[in-house]
Image 1: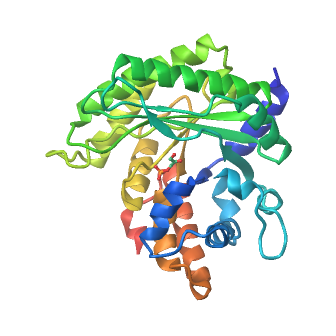
Image 2 (image 1 turned 90 degrees about the horizontal axis):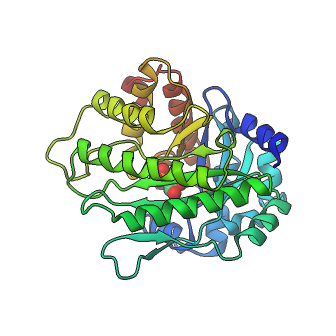
Image 3 (image 1 turned 90 degrees about the vertical axis):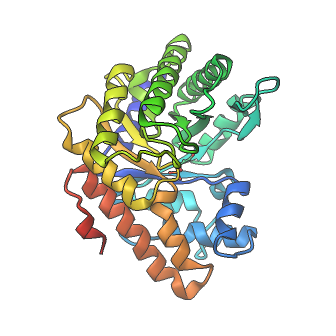
Length: 336
Ligand code: 13P
């Protein structure tokens, strides 16, 4: 096992008041994001957008790692620097999404499983030689209807196998079980499914002999469904989230970096802040947001170079506010 290397990477990722930027949208997802600003999803537009994100002045004050999509590992800035070098120069750790997306779990209605285990060992070795230091694998579960136990076990087992392969190659695995926000379920229903999923994930990680000290858990917060009749308060959500994690996530896990999962940027920041106002927890509690960091930036950018500076300022603002949330010192008046 590569404990020394893994520990060095973990220490660079886990820094006070810093989080991870998820910029690893697959081709299908970035196409959807670009549609929202009516921008052609060409390779050059994707490159230009990622260059804008990665060269935001001051980003490393708040961001310790960035998750890339495969394509970005080979791309360069206009000045000819590879994205990997560009991040390393700023002391930002480059990571890579290694799963190959979702497919239906055949013969089981509604459930999806994550594919990408075939050839994963070779791909992880190749990504490592291209400079990636950590990886991410996302599994998804819906709350209503409840996921089948087959879907929970299959996804958990894939996460375990993926994490073991990564650690074998001295790559830190981000373990991402996402409970979807879609639907009208209650906070309590989300808490129950999150608890069941996390128990199964940690059982699988143990079965695969994954060293918990060298993973990052990237879960969703415990939330009522987007269309639920009762939308709970920020403080109720923070308490439910921490309650579930205290029951299911071993203290050996060094860091929990939440995904934003379709919440507004402001809500994702406010909940992280509320989580930090609860008393001491055994793990570093941080963020690994995609949309909650990028959405305002993308909207301002619109694919136009003349908007670059303002778009970067919008990204920096969200990163700064989430950093403040990690200190429990965010309040909504800082939004203006
Ligand atoms: P969101 O924060 O937009 O949910 O994205 C995080 C992510 O990495 C999803 O896999």
